[in-house]
Image (cartoon, helix red, strand yellow):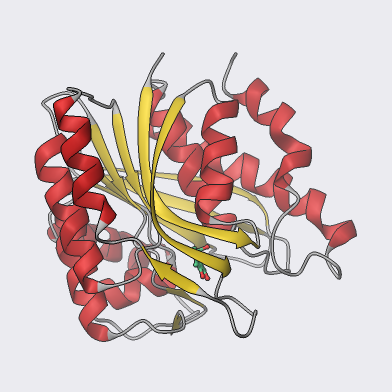
Length: 278
Ligand code: PXL
């Protein structure tokens, strides 16, 4: 079995980060080790008064124990990271667990719709930029891509702009950047990827649904990582992730008023098993 380690927070209620990554990767048939970076009572997207217990100090201890056990992973995948110190410690984790044949996915979770998430600062963005340089794949949305590139966020862009952003993202040091939430018209939305080694661009779209569903970025990143671990090609990785996210959003729509805080991804896990070819 292929093994992934994913490093991100546990939001106890709200369906994102580890509570999404673990079931998604498991459904894809991947053994999934976790390093929880923080425990929050809920995610920070719309809830008030959430608790936040920082687990940064535990990360080097976990890494040390795993080194003693001689553990290794086919893929390392990071999501939401709560502080600059935490990003630096995750960067050290990359240095000790990267091998010649594993891969690193950094989902630079920073913000959405042109704004940084609660508590995030430009200094954290700068640190995340450095972490991206160590990754094989990065998966920013348009907001995160704009912050990483220090460009103004805009919702009016064309394919040439997206290609330019992808090239600039690869210039940060990551060979294969992927931008999510991309749309060139009102009908379709999806992802754009750039394989800088081959100088090839790939796109995958599904029908645009005009509702924001929390945690879909984490679903995309988890499926993408799983697909890469299963040896799928880059265009297939983005296609699987786009298709599953679209299924999840469609499944959430009838529950949307009640479930403003997350997606009904559980209802679609059967589809994901099918997509994974298991
Ligand atoms: O979905 C990304 C995410 C992960 N973890 C926490 C968050 C968010 C987005 O708001 O608040 C704690």
